[in-house]
Length: 292
Image (cartoon, one colour):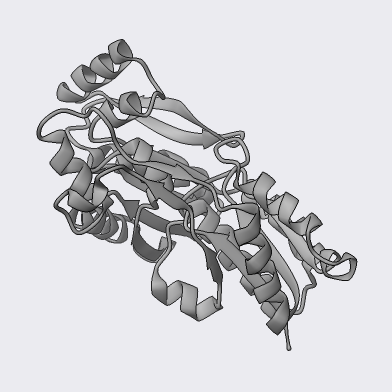
């Protein structure tokens, strides 16, 4: 029996290769979109673009895994490992943490002592970074309680930021009003692009990038800011890029980063943005996650 199984949700942007490499157990969020099966597209973002050709009157929504789903995943994890750590999307963005917390109470008293829950207070690729770090710490021989302590410090150094192609999906999801969506879209047309970041577990506007003709240029401008201090300290920055259906833009960012910073940065991987975040940010969005 191995020492630890790590459970993540599909709220984490990650690749199949990484999941297999670290043996993560993945818990599915539900995608709720009436008539979605009749919309043309290979993924959620293709379908969102198809809907947007007419008028956005309804789009995808997501729902956290149920208590029962989490309970089953915990029992699965405990069958092959001494302990389980479950890493969730920020409790301020989803009810996933609470579902997992309630699920632990349904286990036997002995099994409850073997399951550990970690609120990432983050989302998307940041969850992936935290899960990877937990796996690395486990491979070094750390037990779950110590891993959780280490993750609390580690997660403070993770920066996740995003640039949107359009504010229409934030409006459609009720995150911003129509006037603000129109203002954001007009600003972007003249090269003023807002950057969203995760702060204190919530998605908040962070800064405005001037002379940014597209999302990739806005991301690269913000990346320069985020990695400046660590690089001055001689540290290597690790980066995950996720994209809402625009792989060519993600590759453009990757190539630009590697050309500019060379051995000073490491690109962990590029992945499709999770539908949990993607349903709100919409197609064309780019997300960059940095840690050191």
